Image 1: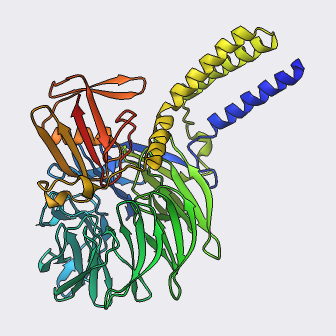
Image 2 (image 1 turned 30 degrees about the horizontal axis):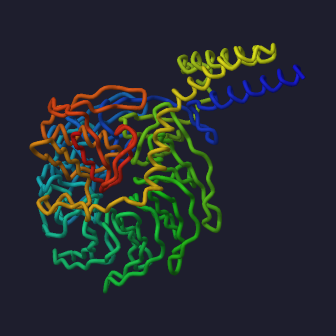
Length: 564
C-alpha cells in the first residue's frame, strides 16, 4: 500500500511539474521562438503593430499622464526613431497605415506612414526618420480620430470625431469635409463610388465622392468598425447594451437582415475570401457569404479588438481578460472553427491589438502586444545559430515551484509515516500557497460570475442624469458622492476594472486617492482626505462585494462611490 501511495505521490509531482513547465517562449505548433522584447512602460499597445519595408512600427496609447507615440524598430529590435504626442492622452485606436510612393491627380507622394491621433491631429511621417511630410488638425469633441482610415487611389479618407474628411495624399489638401454623427472607432469603407461609416447612435452614413451625405438609423446598436463589403452588401456588427447584432445592410435603401445575435462589446470583424469572422465578449463566429451570408460556427471566447491571419491559414486574436493569452484557430473546408491553442506568455494581461505576422526575406516574424505595453517579437529559428543563442530561464518561477514541491513531498512522506497531523499541517500550507498564487484569477472569475447571475443590473439609460453631456452616452462614467457635493467624470473608454476607472476619473477631477493593499485587493481609504466610516461603490446600480481592483466593468458602466 505504501508503494502505491508513493507512486501516486510521484505522479502528482510529475503532473504538477508538467503543468508548470509547459509555459515557455515558443509556439507549440510553430517553429517560432522569442527573439526580442520591448517594454513601453505605463501605456498600452492600442492597435496591431505594422511590418513594412523591413521595419516594425508600433503605436501606444494611455489612460494616464504617460506620453504616447509611434515607435519604429528594425527587425532585430533596435529602436530607429520614435515620435511622441504629448497632447494625445488616450483612446489612440486608429490603425497606422503605410502607403508606398505614387502619384495621381493630386500630385506625387513618397513612402509615408499615416497616423491619426485622438487629439484630432493627422500626420504623414517619413517612415525612415519620423519627420513630418504634412500635418492636419481635425475636429475634437472629447477626442478626435479613433477609427480606421481608408486609402482610395491618391486620396485619404479620414473618419473624424463627427465627420468624414478627404485629403490629397501628396500634400494634405482637403478635398471635402462632411459632417456626420458622433463617432468612436468609426472606420470608413468604400462600395462603388460611395463611402460608408457609422456612428454612436447606430446611424449608417453614406458619403458620395463629391461630399454629399445621407444617413439612416439602423437600430442595431453602435457602429464601431468599418462596414465590411460583402457581395454588394454591407456587413455590420452593431453594439447594444447587453448583446450585439450582426446584420447585412443594403447600401441603396439601408434595409437590414439580422443574421445573428451575439455577445456584448464586439471587436473588429474581418473577411477571408467568402468567410466573415466576428468576435465579441462571448463568441468568435464564422459566416459563409458566397451568395447570402449564413451563420456557420461559433466558439466561446472573449475578444473585443482586432483579429489577424497568421501562419498563412490560421486565425489569431487576443483574449481580452485579466489572464490574457492569444487564441489560435483554424477553419476547415466547411468554415467550421477548430481551436488550436491558447498561447500564453509571462506578460499576459488584457489586450485588444491584433498580432502582426509577416514573412520577410524567408524569415517568419510575429509581433504581439498587450494593454500593459509589453511587445514580444517571435521569429523562425535559424538552425545555424540556435546552438549559440542564450537560453532564457525564469529562475524565480523555478525556485517557487521547487519550494512548493518540497512541501508536497514532505506532506506525502509524513502521510506515509502515518504522521497524519503533521501531514495535514503541510497540506494546509500548500493550499495557502496555491490560493495566494491563484488569487487574481479567482477574484476575476468570481467577479464575472457575480455579474452573470445578478439580475438586478440597471442599464445606463435608467441611471442617466439629464445634466450629463450627451457625449458621455455609451461611455464609462465615475461618480464620487461626498457629504456636501457630487463630482462626476465621463467619456471614458476601454477601461477594464472599476479601480482603473476610479483612478482615471479621480485624476481628471483632481481628486486625491488614498488606498492600501490588502489580502483581497486594493482598498480605498479616502478621497480628498475624506474618510468618513469608509467608502463603498456600486457598478451599474449593484453594490460590489469584491475589491474594485477585481470588479470588471463593461464599455458603458457607471461606477458610483459613496461615503458611509
